[in-house]
Image: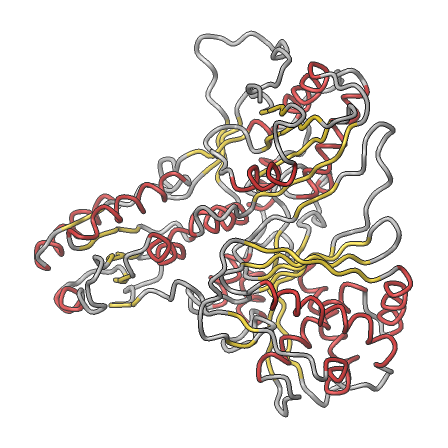
Amino acid sequence: MTGRHGDGPRPATASRSLAAPRPRVHPAAPLQIDVLLDSLTHPGRGLHTGQLHWRLHGPFDTERFTRAWQTVTDREAVLRTALAPAGPGTRLPGFAVHRDAGPLIVRHRAGGADWEALLAAERMREFDLTRPDPLRIALLEEPGGSTRVLLTYHRALLDPASAGHLVDSFRRVHAADGRHRGGERRPDLSDHLQWIGSRDPAAARAFWAYAAPPAGSATLPAGDRGRPTHQRGHGRTRQRLTPPEAARLRAWAAARGAAESTALHAAWALLLYRAHGGPDALPHTVPVAFAAAVSGRAIPLDGADRLPGPLLGALPVAVEVRPDAPLSALLAALTDRAVDLAAYEWVSAGQVHRWSGRDPYEPLTESVLDFRPPEGPPPVTGTGPPEAAEAYTGAPLALTARHDRDGGLVLTAVHDRTRIADGDAAEILWQTTRLLRGLPDTAGPGATVTEALRLLDGAPLPLAAPRPDPAPRTLRAAAAPGAGLVCLLRPPGAPEDCYDGLARGRRGPRALLSTAPRATAALTALAPALAAGEPVVLGGHPGAEALAHEVAGRVAAYGWSRPPVAVAADDRELSRALTAAGRKA
């Protein structure tokens, strides 16, 4: 293994003055806030880490490779961007664009690392977002002279389309021996943020106030397991429709005025409906909800289609499924929802949740569907086709659909194994594929939902475990929106009502919550207030002091203002300490 820039020397750059200029700082976009919060509340899970890899054939020129990536870094502001702490007048994180940065390249000699182990290790290695390194490059030499290239990036600054654009830029520069004419790319992230800031959110807020999924919607295509899975980490499973099967599905959907992606959404809605009450057809209408990925690039900003940045988002889709309704009506409703989403690609899921008026600790959706565009043309000679590894998210289940170069439709499901066991995830994907294969042959123009679900007769109902961290206990609601909250951490072994006496005798505008003595539980409790930029305070009895400071440190590490901590053994003294800490929040 070699250092920051592999075996070759660092390419020459403009000389640095002793006093480097201050980086340009801009506030985080709403979608970036969502990604940061997801990573903050799920520590050590490798969330929002995307990967792209390919193979280079023939002799490898380390210096030329490094020089090409340095040129791309000099041109792309996003590759010189790092997390910046909350500044004056705001409690929210920002991002700083530095003048100088270099590619982070590590080269592994042949036999020095196993490829699958390298993939997993790079995914789980956390990014230090305070450094301008949102993209890491690992090189693995192989016997025979080829080299495998692995790009690992964080979704707070890049998305899959961005990674593809950067690889295209690298290949052009590499072919030109590491040289490129022209200055920085425009538009960049700051232009995108300025465009978002120019939007009037009133129409979006009004739309999502009624279009968000209602409480009680079916959100997972699985029944209640009622107990933990006793599995850890994330799993991945895959199915494929052959080119003729994919063509039949496309033609079937088109004959009903729907896109192929809408057919996938319909199959998912059927699974959500079926799981809501067991394997038998249900006699009642059921609201179902899932998130659908949106590129974030179909916006009226020149150059947005090739702007490297974290534009990919996922917005809720909510429909009612009726057993006696024609399947064509479900397809029509889902088509309408897709049109609605297209108007709000710039909105984040976190904003939707706040505008919905729903309980901030109750998820609107628990699965994400992403129908990717077809793969592009084969790469230039000397390189293998790039392959993507889907990023883990905080959702229990994410399904990606993509056409391969043969015209088949590849479905990949990534699941949180603490919620959905491997066998249940495989069953969910098999049932999805069964519907997509069978609907064109069995669901005629007048087929109903009940008739379509007969394709799954005899199939078992997959199961999902409950969420590991229940919602915090609300001791007192906030006096007004935006007032913030006080989060009290229960010491280990303390009863749930250990702070009830304090709550009865304490006055103040902020919400008062108590949580279990776990960092993830406390971070989950803080998340809605952090997302809205509200003041937060941590506190508790002495047994919770170390955990409170740990949580405060984690919050600060992701760019938010560090929450003050108040600790006292007596409820009266704790109340006074909380009041004093609140003045600093």
